[in-house]
Structure formats: structure tokens, C-alpha cells
Image (cartoon, rainbow, N blue to C red; front, side):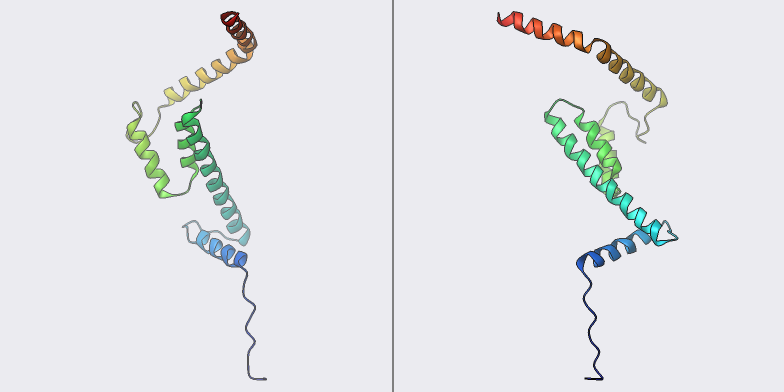
Length: 144
């Protein structure tokens, strides 16, 4: 058996998937110089995908629970590195009144939202306990 070549051991599925992910990352248009840059790009992309789908799941649950469901869904979609996610965000923005067609929210609106959020947080921290005691006392008075 001197003329026969032994077949090389098969690559594991993990090796095949890793090589495919690295090759896809190299083909994204941004040129990575080193293997470490390719690995970092894959890790960031995976983190964005996992985080995006997690936020979308939380947002869907917040549609029926108290909370900002649509906001969480849009944030989750914005993390996803897929073209369909960007198209979905554009479709949602077109249906929301007050947001221009290009999807840009004016700086003035961001400032107003920030001030209102900080103000609501300050009020909750300052008066939240008193309001909670008052509400529980009022509730008990109704049933006494």
C-alpha cells in the first residue's frame, strides 16, 4: 500500500462553520487585515444578532404587557445586520405620525424626550415611595 494516500480526517462541523463565517466576514466589503480582525467582526456580528432578536422578543412580549413594545422592537431591528430589518424599520417609521420620510428624528425632539425622561425618573425617585403608600392606603380604604 505504498502508492495509496490516506484520506485526511474530516473537519468537524465547528471548523467548517467557523471557516465559512470567516470567509463571509471577509466578503462583506470591509477588508480585515488580520485573522484577529475577522474574528472580532464575526463576534460583533453574532452579538448584534443575538441582542437584536432578544430585544425583538422582549418587545413582542411588551406589546401585551405594560411597556414600550414597539420601541424595543425597533431597537432590536436596528441592531440586526440584515437588509430586511432596515426595510421593516422604514415601514414602521412610515406609519408613525410625526417622523419624516427619511426617518430622522429632529434634534429638538430628542432633547424634549431626554428632558421628559430625566424629569419622570427624578419624580419617581423623589416621590415614588409616597405615591405607593398613598395608593395602597387608598386601595385598602375602598375595600374596608
